[in-house]
Image 1 (cartoon, rainbow, N blue to C red):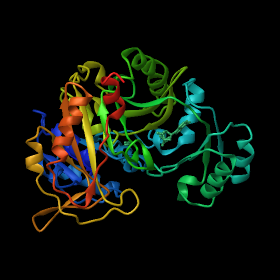
Image 2 (image 1 turned 120 degrees about the vertical axis):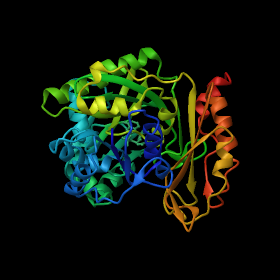
Image 3 (image 1 turned 90 degrees about the horizontal axis):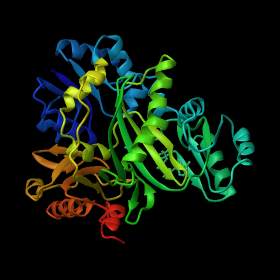
Image 4 (image 1 turned 45 degrees about the horizontal axis):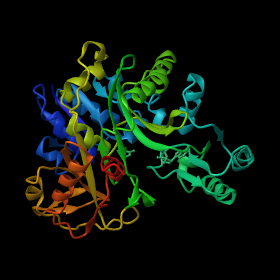
Length: 426
Ligand code: AMP
Ligand code: GLY
């Protein structure tokens, strides 16, 4: 099976690493890739916004399966264009990717399918939004409707803050993403992520995780793409996972199928575990980054086989994914200044020595310049380890971090704290 992987982050390095272990894999290409992905795949340059160019490449290189890592090309309809050209692809069509591309779309779908989620109102003008605010208690959540790279959500602690957020969004501070806003009731509880893969009809669970979105220790400071994660998330007990499958995932898949826009790929549900049960906060149409890194470390099944079965609509005839019972934990090393202005070009050394500590290092924003590895993005490395529990996985991950020489980098030292605290019985 010849595969083309699209993307360049730690998530895609983890996918590449796992796909490379498949006995089914033939030729393996990635675009644009990164130096970590280059250990497994031939890197090629393609303009992925030019769907015709990607289709042409697939024809010329006998590509059997395209794996789309990030959300932007999905929301842009790349998977759909490939499917229309009879190329198997892991990732949803444009219409189904609206689950991530439009928060309002997802809320309306939840309303139609009776899926537990926070109460909401959609608004397309500042005046309507300000009027709608009257019906919400404070704190209240204000969201830009479209893709805003994880930055389009404001939790307003006062009415003034809520009004300012609305005014800002309609003034264009989030570009097109803020042309419509969703106002949501504020939910309280612990957050957890749940994954499922679906071929449009059949759905199978694909593990749980918890991440750390804030840049600072103790979960403070600005939001990031994610500073670390671990899997599984024991707060999502088997009973709760079953409830999530029955009340959230399955009705989503069924509704999209019934409406003629079936969802194919991975569904990543951000959940709030409230006193009255799990509620959907948001959907993503792709794997999380860095959640993917910890899921791949635990996945024992053949990823290429699962992705192809998903793409072909064969999940019912394929063995369900199996995950190791151990805990995987990943610590993101970012360039100083992240998330606002990460320093570029910082030297990175001693990765091999760090991996000898028993960790796996996934590359995110790295580049090779004159034979040396340097930082080229905000999140740079994802240092990942497996242990009998979160405490052991955390020890191993930080032992590896401590071997890495990356002067212009930093990481949080408390990744996994919720679980580690629980394991200590505190
Ligand atoms: P989202 O991009 O929709 O996942 O939102 C980013 C973060 O905002 C989530 O991970 C939550 O921490 C928080 N959040 C979003 N919606 C709500 C809500 N309705 N109630 C409380 N917190 C929320
Ligand atoms: N780590 C969160 C995300 O990928 O959206």
